[in-house]
Length: 449
Image (cartoon, rainbow, N blue to C red):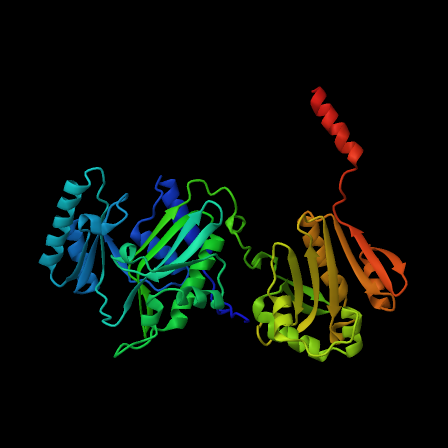
């Protein structure tokens, strides 16, 4: 399948999220307050119920009046992971007296049940009435081997008892999010039954994609718990959230992932042949544009690229070209605009590294309409710069000896050519390995020292 991406007009406020995390860390806290956690979710466009923080019972009454009755009151106490343990949640409070009594009761129970905990105040939020909504949970935990793991399942106070959860490794796409949901028992209820309509699955998948993006962006986050996440035919909304910080973030966010996500930092806009070109790594949703590219180039160009005459490209083949492992392979694509899916491919370059990152093989192709604009050289230099920065030692490729434009391009970027009949080998040293005798001298000096 060709997975769709998050809508292109969605941009998380990563800076705002990091400010919230940094503030909690600077205050010596490993866990964000509920309101802070909700603000982080909001920075990533995840719907949350508006909450107000009240330091005292009287302030809670005033906040409830501002929001409008009925309201929900929750205790705010750092160190209390599950509010229900201390009776820290009161629903459907419809008067000022009810709010005040609930707040005082929570204060007393916290003192009796958790004398070590410090009362930070109360969270006041509107009482959400969605009778057909399902309580779900979306969470993130950090595995010592696999790194961050995303879980989804049935939520609510009985979530740990029901234990209906499925897990997946980030980064997620729409296909993976759909699969994650389908592996839970509650998914059958979400599809609708009796007089209950099916939930808005697309809204649910989008939350999973946004949580996945959060994990990819924020190395400071060790755990996320969105419970409950209400879901019905009208969409989704997070009623409660918890975020725990990593003790020692150390590695960058993307380095701790078992699967490398799309490297958005490699996107760029450049000028080639007098026009602007949008240059970026290939993405799964580029498959239609890639098919259009191959269908619009002459058969002879395809023969030079693939060393044989080509028929129609299958979906499986195009999916293999567009869905790559960014750890071992990189494909840079030049588009005539950043407007996907309307953008047209002008050319692409592929680099595939061996498991030890010693050698990478390349292939490059430029659309006839873009030839003569320096597109081939732009693509090759982009790949060379990427591989050099990635520590790859040697770049190699093979071209048909009759493909003179390709051989000339190889010469221009500094490659050495060696002809072998119908084929020509092209080689470029990117990061030459030190001679063995140099390494030996360093070892002897170290042993003498």
